[in-house]
Length: 63
Image 1 (cartoon, rainbow, N blue to C red):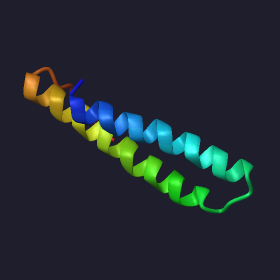
Image 2 (image 1 turned 120 degrees about the vertical axis):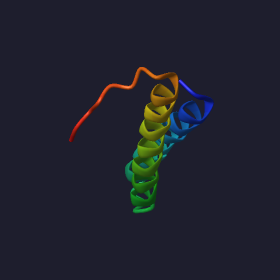
Image 3 (image 1 turned 180 degrees about the horizontal axis):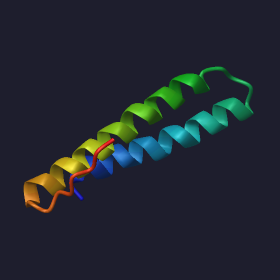
Image 4 (image 1 turned 180 degrees about the vertical axis):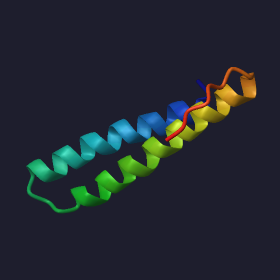
């Protein structure tokens, strides 16, 4: 797994935790954290797939 994928995964996990804390405290700011978690998880998948393709063992996933 590439370094960028790990960073994106770390941001995803931290933003999910921040969203949970925000919602528990009653703040609607958690919605922003949820959106950030979605973007960072997509980035993590992108970098994982790009790393696999660069190594040549990418599997064709449709859908």
